[in-house]
Amino acid sequence: MKELMTGNEAIARGAYEHGVTVGVGYPGTPSTEILENFARYPGIKAQWAPNEKVALEVGMGASLAGARVLVTMKHVGVNVAADPLMTAAYTGVNGGLVLVSADDPGMHSSQNEQDNRFYARFARVPMFEPSDSQEALDMVGLALQVSEEFDLPVILRTTTRVAHSQSMVELKERKEVLLRPYRKDPKKWLMVPAFGRLRRQALEERLQKLKAYTETTPVNFISWGDRRVGVITSGISYQYVREVLPGASILKLGMTFPLPEGLIRQFAAGVERLLVVEELDPYIEEFVRGLGLEVTGKKIFPAWNEFTPGLVRRKLKEAGVPVPSPGDGEGTDACLPGADGQLEELPPVPGRPPVLCPGCPHRGVFYVLRKLKLVVTGDIGCYTLGGLPPMEGMDSCVCMGASIGMAHGCELADSSLARRTVAVIGDSTFFHSGITGLIHMVYNGGHGTVIILDNRTTAMTGHQDHPGTGKTLMGEPAPAVDLEALVRALGVGRVRVVDPLDIAGLTQAIQEEAAAGAPSVIIARRPCALLQRENRPPVRVDGETCTGCKNCLKLSCPAISVQDKKAAVDAIICTGCGLCVQVCRFGALKEGGENNG
Image (cartoon, rainbow, N blue to C red; front, side, top):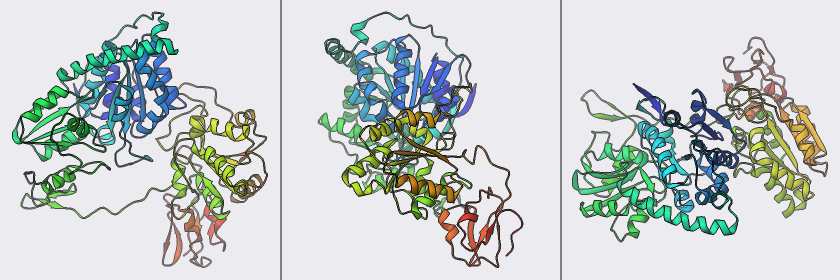
């Protein structure tokens, strides 16, 4: 039976079909839907971990005990999990272990676009890269097989387009895989230096076997065509090359570590001109060049942003490569067939910047922070949007959990900032990697204020549960972490809970805590507006009172606009949260009722 699936759905299906019994990860776009789909299958255990390091460690424990395991995260999550990953290559596995790294070329929902193919080389573990949903499913099974055969964890690297694009997938029944017996073996699993040195040598021996395997694996193959140009490619770029150069000779690499030296040499010898088409860094190109082969890659293609068929077509033409034209709309990705059957370019779509949702409880926090002119070190989450115009209530955002450490660092550099600096972090992010930053601040005598935006979910990636929500990924009830008790246990003496939709109360709390001269935590608690919408009537506008001052626009609420120089409220999307009523200096915005004006 065939079914249309996204790459993420196919990975989940592949894990199920090939006997995976444990799935664990941390939500992060574009990887989130893998575990959400995997959790729906019978007879498995799926969990959200507090962060990616814990996820991989849980996965390693399940593998140690003999289960087949899937661990999922986005590309920056591998940075967090890098500590256990590097040593996991030494210990190896018992049950097969596949780590999904979902990269994000173009930074659709990420703070960077690092190329995680280098992690495979760095950690010395095999890597597979699917180019469509069928390959995503099949490569999970192949990766598990390779993991157990070569005693190594395996990275399955996807990108946003593969993760979220749909293609047909052949579904099969689940293969039940027996739990591999656990055998006590300290020399394999106990990485003290003496045993580590032995496993380091064993790792090199396993890599030599892998290098032979990669020459013959069916996921690395040559499609001979026009030999004037030969293209080496992988992942989603393979689909673009096939579309743009349907008659070219192509070396398609599905296993990208180790790279197949012999196959590459064979392919290079059979074409007149050798090109590499790959998103982000010149990972394949540098390897090919290191073989002493003449090759062109990043001289033509950019080393940043994601590719499109139009970009590939345009760059190849600029490099003098004969490219069949799709019609009058050459080099574009936005085109439709015209009356004569030729492609016609569509006008560009207007930009639509991201914005906090109507009724978002975070909105009041950033309005107040901007008004108080504080230095605000921010963090990763949908609340990061509070740093964009017109709110501009956040000064920095680097990585998960960095806000608290950075706030303390500001104080160390300039003591005058101690009472003017506030760290802002979400509840899920605080559990992920903010706790240790707060411990550091308290332990080292810091005086900073931390605002935890507690909206009771991991909102940015689609409302996943976390240790503070009282529910697991499998939908089972769980103890909910008491945030107030937790931060007090870390040594914070000043802890208060506020309603982020109460502007006056919020302003007072931030002013008092910032001036206190002691470490403090403000918990701004209100559920995400998309999870728990209160039944409140929309705000109405008194057109006679409104002066058109536009102060309400500083809230950056999608429900508020200006029409005929007066404020206007879209009653369909307004949640009646009342923030705009509180910030209107003339009383023109009122709770409930019909608009007047």
